[in-house]
Image 1 (cartoon, rainbow, N blue to C red):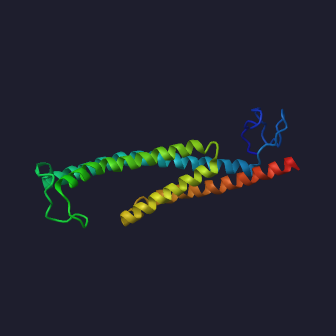
Image 2 (tube, rainbow, N blue to C red):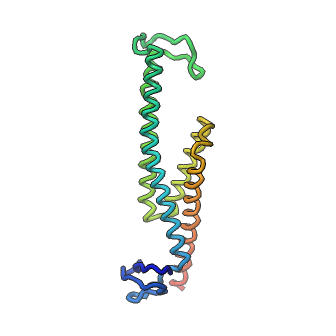
Amino acid sequence: TPKKPFKCAACGTQAKPYDRFCGKCGQAMPTAEDRQNEKKVKEAVNAVRVLAALFFVSGLLLWFATKTQADGAIATLGLEAMDPSAVLPQEINGRKWTAGELLKELRWEPTGVLLINMILCVAMLALSFWAKRAPLPAVLAATATYAVVLVTNAIADPRTLGQGVIFKIIIIAFLVKGIRAALALRAAQKSAAAKAHA
């Protein structure tokens, strides 16, 4: 066990440094390895919270940038002054658009970007709270979600692979360490339960 005192999980009594069992209820104290794994799981949960904050901030920034671009395109093409049913002469993204369709699409795009990022933010926050009760599935779900976001962004725009690569590696490292630590804690708990029943 670590030098810093901590409380017994069963009765809440503060344990003394290096206690192997609770002095009040006799509950076995976590091993040093268990405490280290718990620390890694907490770091992974903190990484999930950082991702929630990142999605929130990037959502706002992308909304602003996308809205500025969309407003510029609307003004340049003069879409608001055109008949909504008029077909534009040039193809955009490989298809023909009416003025009304393109105007609607350009006005929706900033909101869509913001909405996706806010959903991801809320999902990461929910997973960070769920991690208190079920750390392994919560960290696994957060890692899978983040991986899907990275792959989707890379497919949409390959340049995103190189953007913030150091940050991405750090976050993924914390998440992977958290998964390994949560697996080790689960194995230790199963082993302790098996010994208690034996």
